[in-house]
Image 1 (cartoon, rainbow, N blue to C red):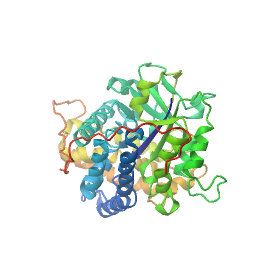
Image 2: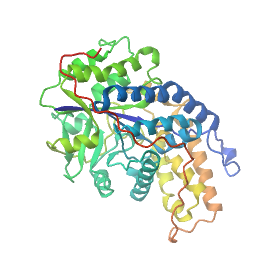
Image 3: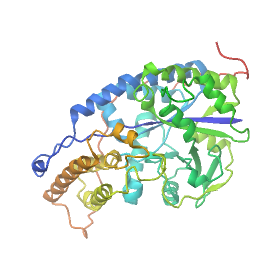
Image 4: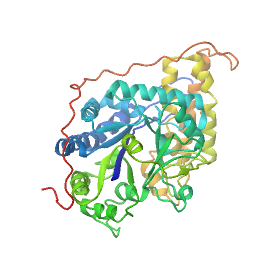
Length: 437
């Protein structure tokens, strides 16, 4: 049997307000609350709510023959609980069907895996607890921020109890090999790797509504035809997408919802594929080969490396200045300081400082709220400077003092719990060649 993993990332950062040099030391309000609320409400109405409703309808129609996976960041969870709790309730209803897997990730959607191992472990643990509290699942599959992975990260992820990891099927790592198999980490054979099929995934994310593309329009029938052209010995196709692709990046008028609503029926009727989750696939398939990743890879841009977030002088200086304060933040242990510390780590802040205007410049400009990367850097460093002053004024211990103080965990806002789990019906597999009416 052959499998499809349909995995969605759900993430929204806390966007910073315009913070000038003269605010430093006087104004500790860093976030553009109006813009954050406006964007969350807009994306919820255009994307999250209709997408959740569509997924629930598909589960009702196809039972456990259709499955999806979600990776939801801490900033997204916090803002949804505050501004759009109906979205959280929708995810809880989806979880109750038994057809959804939630993956682990860094709580802040941060680059902590590259900056500080202790902070990385703290955030992954916090995120796992949050997912358990909200959705009743303790993730066993890990999806790092922006699919960033190398062998060292894999070792840490294994230490935290994860047995499966999602990352990019980068050509310079795979060479002649296909991403459509289950692999394992070369330094830890117990950690299984599922690699993103970036061509098919990006056909939906970026090219779905591109009228100048030779394959436009993309229909469910055409997409299943592409799946059927994959060599028969290749066992799993991993489609990793932003959830905002549905309705926000690709508007409803493009037919994106119609495409996804028709996809399960076409896959089940007209192909040998069956939908699964990463946790299930890692149990059902045997890894075919090790993958050695000495240098970090990601799912960004053509290079599939870290240069979307790190590499130029602006990004490297901001990253260095931020993470040199990790021990001071933990020593202080104040909830308000830790809250801002987490939000300032979100990878988007470094993405906005990217100066790549050639291979993927249009993509970067689309997601960047600042006129230029230099203004993004100045604004971020002004906020970070005030944050450091606040720590100094709070009387944090010196670098050699390590008091026995555990960070205080902030309780999540209350959200109405859904009814207890009611598994959907188990529907027999559709026979090949019979299209669902």
